[in-house]
Length: 118
Length: 110
Image (cartoon, rainbow over all chains, first blue to last red; front, side, top):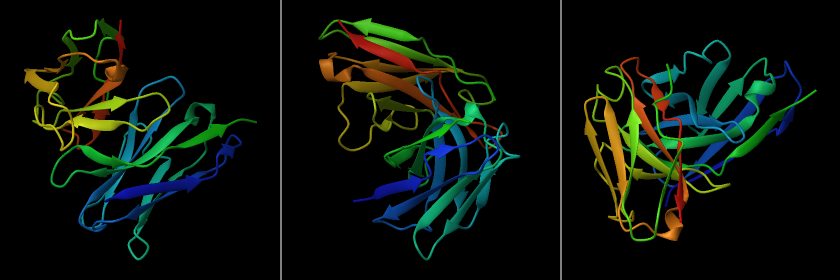
């Protein structure tokens, strides 16, 4: 059974860097693509970006200048960094696994609420 | 990339069928067979219920079905049940190699 467990700082000040990590338990890590998605309070879902061990990273153009997604295959973990945060970055952030050879996300983390406030 | 367009809310009585639309463009919904649907209950992570337009993951009720015509996809929930009350999001791969979600639809069971 695949499980994704995520963690990171929940309260940030404007201009700080958001940092979250997602650990993958069960299944292969390097054979799959992994994404970060966020959801502002009361609003819809927004794809942030993805990472694949062999294919590299892709980012949402609207966030590309501030986002870095990296991986640590020795720990079966991948991470999200978002720089220069503002109140608009306040959201629940999810990590997710891409379904094998599909474009769908079949396993999700529990979500992490990140609030940005001065 | 603009979010795919979904109705804000859809409602139905128990046992009825409802359909949620998801409209995009020829650069996303119309371009690939990558359309998927997610169900999200309050305070929970989204759950995949339809992938590749019409396919259900193992364990998902066959009351959920999907279709697509041109730039518009649809999710139908038949035999509506109280547990179906949730938010539903469509998602598509795009010709830019990115993903775009729909605006979301709140389903109410009357």
